[in-house]
Image (cartoon, rainbow, N blue to C red; front, side):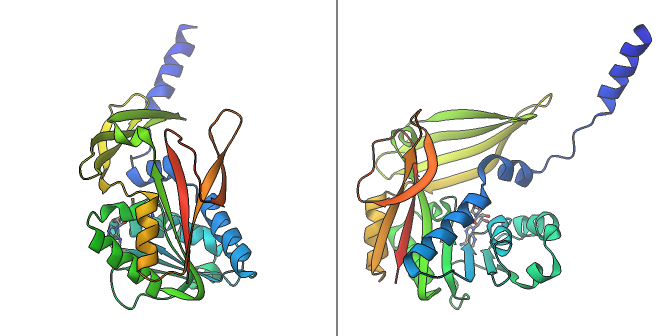
Length: 276
Ligand SMILES: C[S@@+](CC[C@H](N)C(=O)[O-])C[C@H]1O[C@@H](n2cnc3c(N)ncnc32)[C@H](O)[C@@H]1O
């Protein structure tokens, strides 16, 4: 009995957690590339009556969405655009490693600014996880939207997501428990005069202390109405908001439909699809 206990203890000691990598925990907590590419594929098909071939993922980080896109069909191509070499390298080691040679040939990841002129064109240009919120001035966001429009093929579309609701206008911290760790979405501050907000992501693995501020977002909370105005201003001909439906508990059900009227959910996520 005593001996068995000692062995169990020894085993526990030996079960060391793998080295912490913030991208692994980020992706596991917030990303759902399968649903993203499903929405992109279905929306384009509905609007254009054919499948899209090329996806350009702006602010692509670890280019997980690009990699998922390539798996949909043998003619799909993906281009990722990202400034920071660190997430690009993580994506190379982790996601590209799972692609076959043919899929790899159809992927290019550019270490570039999304504002750069001459970025490759695509059937779908996307900016996910609210990345464009980092542009705080109207003229800067307008310049980005104009550049995205330049990158859209003749039949192409530009897809961005957006989030909002009263919950985003008061400081709060939300903990989500996952197997072996907790993810914290920390809204540190909100300034109603400028709509600027500071968010942090923290993680805590079981048995370890909280790792604070693994990701820092110094953002402006853009509203759907002003975003639609800007997208029309840069020359898109049709801009549509896709609002998420609710399940029986009032939670988002992951199904987004075009609408001109949302509900006053405490926190909501929507897509905006812009057509040439
Ligand atoms: C909020 S993260 C989103 C990452 C990924 N798209 C996702 O869905 O989780 C924003 C990313 O945009 C990158 N970024 C910031 N400014 C950029 C710019 N001007 N051009 C290209 N990438 C940029 C950052 O390095 C970061 O990886």
